[in-house]
Image (tube, helix red, strand yellow):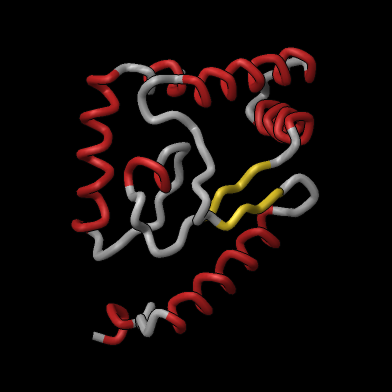
Length: 140
């Protein structure tokens, strides 16, 4: 549903304004979305593009649905994800792209915990190289 709504110029314009202002209200933020690094914050100092094989994504989605008591066939979920990916990559407004400056993670074989650990390590190293203090707000 969100992918279909994202095709609307009017909805995207409003969301872009909201998303660009969100970190200002929170002294920074970590944002997740299919156009965060390409459209919302193209100048972000650190960008990650997380991907996984289609079958792995479908299996994870199926597992999530099972936890909610819902059953969907793997074949149906693969088709729905294919459709969503195609729609998001080819839409006119804020298409899904991996920017050249993004750090790409293929998360097909990793756990969320491992991905999280690797991203935190990269962010800490990157902030040190930028001479930024990620704990500055916590100290004051």
